[in-house]
Length: 358
Image 1 (cartoon, rainbow, N blue to C red):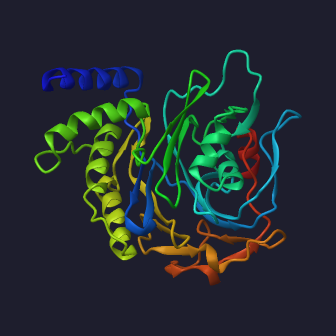
Image 2: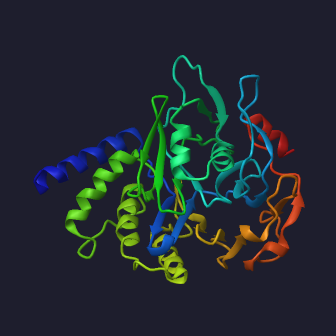
Image 3: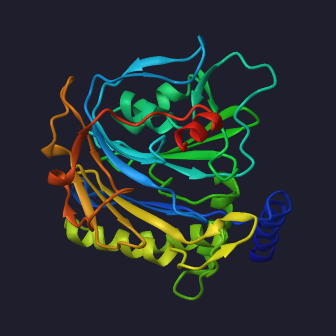
């Protein structure tokens, strides 16, 4: 395929994307895999308004139910985890004790359900938690999720935006996977090459756009807008520029640098397009050391949770870092700032959220 034909193909993808969804979504996830299993996953979360988020460390052995109704899935967590929970009702990402990371990112146009649905419902608020509770590696997760036993039941977010998501998985080996739902069917992309994800268009089309730009070369020119496709191209180029190293401080600095490059500044917000908005928070997961780093835009001092410092045995207390109602600026290791808690309550409906606000 010549350069002009490649350019026309890319423009066609972009045109279709804009015609279906004129909004340009936010959130960027990248994975660095260096020597000696030096694997780091980073993520920006961007939205028009703050998404109040707390951190929870949870032990093994927690009983969960996937949705309301008799047809819901029930399970008991096999692995402890640290999770970021929005509105104290929905897990947006996390890392488990086996160093599996799951990040959920916005994907408009997602269709979770088929016309005649026979699978069981899984609340979007528990999708990431289910993965972290049940799987130790990306291979395990891909094998389990490929059975396609549930669909995602997704109530709208507070504010009215649809909860249409795709999931990005990564593990300590550097293996990765992207999970999307198209016309009700689960679609899984699996391999170490799946190290970057943003939002629309679907992952396969994003890869086509990135391949076009890779021919030009990032040292000559890179697209610079806040659009999902442009962030995907920049993130793909810059994550590949980090030196191949066993030094975690170098890898961590490199991943944070990529996230800053793809972040959206404070003040960027487009009416009726909540996703084209400022970065609210960022996280970095160090798979090798089981350390989860977190920083908000308005308190950019980095805090972290070291899972190896917590009791994750069945029956141990759930520990919570209350960032929403924090009375001080957290910085560094927050183990001593976390308190025992009963745990978050998954959101199964908007009515449930409205009741919680009264």
